Image (cartoon, rainbow, N blue to C red; front, side):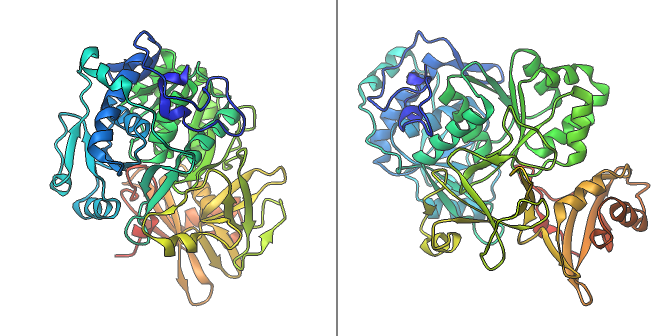
Length: 512
């Protein structure tokens, strides 16, 4: 079973042992005869046996070259990236995934802060000047079994649950990116909790086109299937055609971000093959940002299937999820995962006990899914936690009477205090997207002498030549929500600013 991927069995399964996860013991020998599919990127693939041999060979070299330090991985969407990560973790070395699209200044900061011993890359990768000072070790998947055989004698890494598995850098919206140190315990806890919630097994085949430098695509999207003994089919580059092809060819699960599901919703009316593929999937999962209700409904109407949402962040991995046997309710992210405690608090830290669907508070969480701190930033680490160990997420939410969590936005950018009301930007954005003249929408607040803050809508028209009038959009929102939630100002854009994960960058929405 998963004995061919040692790192994924280095920590006991949480909360309960899973039959497919071997006990914590010596790292098993590679099994070249194990031909179960493990990874496929485009036309290139590795079986579990081939992955074991390749990862063990590279792990042996890493033990000698990295001397126990951190290892950077040039995280392009290729087989070599996945092998590099598995090998580094098997060798007991923390992984620093690097975004290939990062600019020189950001890369320079991450490398100076994390100080990796070397960088792993695919043989053909052209690395930018910012990383050329690092020792480079190519991930060569063309080694013969004889060349790799010497690595089989490498003893198991002496690592435990609290040892770091990853240092993943945050987006840096409030300053330079901070390196969140994720222990092995957090990785295995999260993957096992999701397996319980989603009934995730070795029979599942996951398809996705997510980048591999962050939690969603790398930890959930690559290590998640490997821990269960299933397989991954990475599209390389996301497309509705690729999704349809893989789901119609036996894939059972799809992971994506809202931008991807929006593209699927747009393509569905003219593509019955895509509708059939999505309808046949066991699970459609969206994360990294809120999926607009409008896209939820369009996909459900065309396929009869609802998209499940989950909620997490770099520092906490996953906190909540809609269960496979639960209600995929648009606008909600389900219930806390096994082992995760979640509460809402007022601005002064007072817990909100009411599950009334209306009381807005900041989400705080604690549990084994949490990171251990920010690398070299004890001040930031201390400020991120309360005295009794709750992590301050900065996300604002309400809880429905049945405990479902509905996120209304980030405290810094999505909570608008207008005329004595606390208004979440997300529900206004969903209302705007129901207007046929709106292609994309974002909502922010800006200072107002009378109201404190006024609601501002940033709209990408469905037809740029004929944008809907501001008064029409304001009335549209007031009709669906409440008059005090209507936009007082509407600004028109050709596109909304987004990062590589498809997340909206609201801090860039400023009047020129």
